[in-house]
Image 1: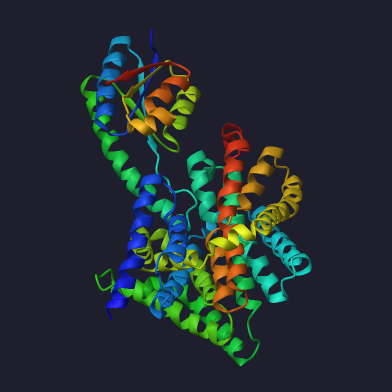
Image 2: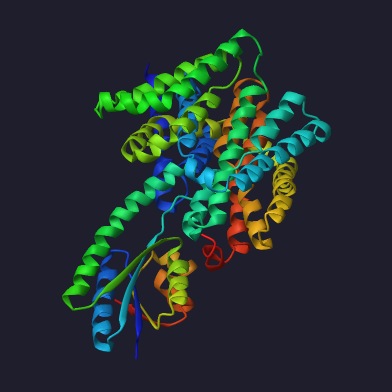
Length: 140
Length: 378
């Protein structure tokens, strides 16, 4: 049913739950499993390249750790996890990556915002679900 | 004495506020410090004391050095012809266009118009870089050409700032001779000296760089030139060493961004008069349009000659229209040296800030070229 699964991993508790479900589904359907992590805080309108590079160095260190853990967890279930870290807006980057990679399932953790923010803009999970080109599972 | 500490608390409190906001909303610390500075200057009892002016001046020199130290010679070499042509035209077209408008139409004096031309000729390599990191263009051929061209444009800006208002006398001769000698010796001396002294908590490496920047800065000012010119050139000649030595670069950035550049950007913002923005809105809009239009006149035909697609042309030209660091340095140079008044400073800085934001949004929203096609050229 699912041949290529993408899981969004930002290291949050929701993302960890989503990873577990994605690994389980990849095992069940014998599917390829990929993960995408988004460096969301790249400083816009910076004064020096250094400011951007310093942020990226920190973010890369953070994502390296969470992705190492994710790869290890997938390995325990006999699944190879292909990881990718991209900079950009979280919703846009995940949606575009799932389009470009022709994924047939996207698994995300529930990512809540404050009530006011959620009402105005919609939560990240809501927006991804709305814009995604493939089936989405939101894990709570 | 308590007034000094109160002022210190106020300035550093504003710097902290900008830093926290920057983390929350992913806007650069520089832009937020300017904006917070505008609020501080207009609504709080913020004083620009002598020590604030010194730290701000030091911040601008160090910022320029760091910008110079980011010039990657490999990127410059790869597409030298394209990046040199685009970079030179990207400087001269807005410099001449804005200067002519300010002088002939807006009625500014020649030195005032020259400051306007310099401040609006700049292109912000860092603004472009963050856009490219997010889109992945930094790895493409087009991305590398744009970044290299930006370094050339910035060099044009600091040279113009350094030579247009200088006195051509013995001091200038001494300044040129000492700078040339220093630039020749530094790439050989610095690796040897830094290896000898090693990395210590007392930071002998950082102190050595400060010594060079202060020494050449003093000579530049004696010749009525500008200290940012030698700072950028020293950064450029040491760039290969600094690019290969990320720990040292990191430590210098920490020094700059903790204690020095906040004073520079906050001061730059604090000098903005809010009523002037409202009263001069039309001129601000005109200058912004003029800057972008002049960049188009300079860059578009060149990109056509180099056979880039229409979308790539639009994207490149819009990104080359951005400005921030060198634009604000030029405007503040003009105000500090009493070449322009506070109203003119407000107008120029507002245009500089708008030029960081408006062309970037338009380029990203409507003219982002297809990365897959572009990637094939890498």
